[in-house]
Image 1: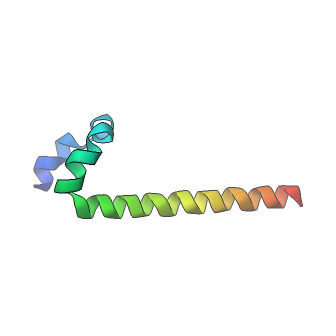
Image 2: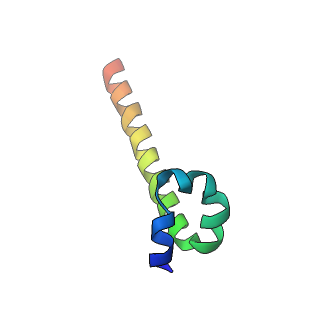
Length: 57
């Protein structure tokens, strides 16, 4: 399954197909990736806010 899914995954195809294909085939993979993306975005936003506060003070 992983070898079968690998060639179909890259970037642009995954974007518009992620809702239908990723949800039913790779739910566990999508959950992990979405969680890591959320963590990265949250930490980046916190970092930006801290930098802004440091600059303001």
